[in-house]
Image (cartoon, rainbow, N blue to C red; front, side):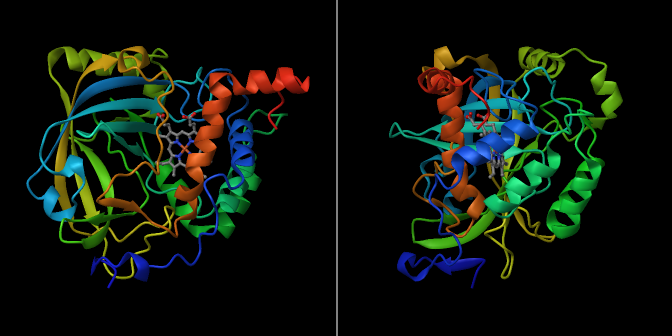
Length: 341
Ligand code: HEM
């Protein structure tokens, strides 16, 4: 039974994912650079523009019945949340695809990360599909725009990606980082103190309610408008999100972030995040602030057959190496000008 099962780690076998975390890492990051229109020294390859906020996460009483994870036990946990736009070009202001990457600072001194975005689903099930998608999205050097024919060809061969892209077409511009739902998209296995395990997907839902505006309206605003709007809210009151788990039923794919589940799946509220103020990397004492999708903690597991989550850690580390000086060092060492390869 997939939705709920007694956990038997040796009985669950991975049958698809034979890739280690560094599978095609450099290639994946080079593809992201090309799709994002270049390398922006010192910035993340994707989600370049962002600000970090500090707050607290408190689990509800039901959370610990689903997972024995330290942050699901009800004790308030310190959290940072990096709010970002999706582009790898920091000159581009956030519009309708934005993200919230949270770090939970657990009582035993370890950290667990949760990276969520405002997409309905991801565009790829495998690293190969991601490379194809990035290639199709890469702007044509002549027009500076993605080639629509290439994107259409990709969609024709990938119905899940086509569905996500169609939904995205109708996704309005943001009114506020505080009024949008963020989704980590991958499925996770939640294991409680008795060893009972359940597959689920996370959702962050804004307490202020979801709202949008025409993209053209948002485009009229200044580059940092959405951050300033968010910080004005924080001056008045904390900004809060509910953390919900969407519980899988038998047959729901748990290894494919591009496959949506039927919309009627039961949802359980497992916690509340309250963001209270802006914070810097220096104050946190973490100048890199890499968010690692595979940094889960006991009581939460990633899917062993999800080929996308398997390769994200490696790609993110390559981006970290580049943005903290690796690319410049490499260019000097090899005598190259630091091309995107
Ligand atoms: C093969 C698939 C993917 C690749 C190659 C990829 C690549 C990257 C890279 C290179 C970075 C910059 C990391 C850093 O410098 O710290 C990044 C950041 C990010 N990615 Fe992905 N990504 C993938 C899938 C996803 C998915 C499925 C999501 C959806 C949740 C996602 C959401 C984000 C977010 C929110 C950030 C910014 C994190 C932060 O604020 O620190 N990515 N991605």
